[in-house]
Length: 89
Image (cartoon, one colour):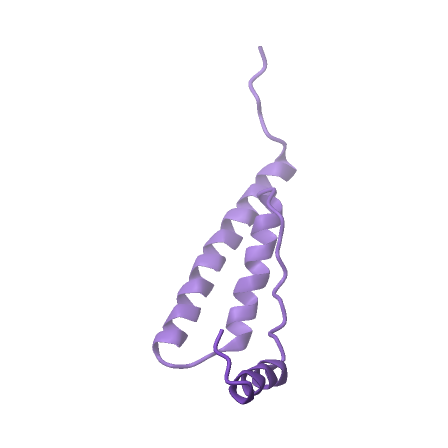
């Protein structure tokens, strides 16, 4: 019986995914350190999100793209409406 040996291309892809996983972990640490220092560094957070998406895709999970934040004027208008109508939900 022939053992289940992976092709060279599969080995290179597995190694690349392992490196991306390590990069994802380091980026997550960087994002947390920025947060602890009171900074928001958007490029680092976006890089973490993109690398997480790539790793998820190779692991067979679906990638959730980053959802754009809700416009603040809508939330402000809703708060103002509740204040004027004296409603608290």
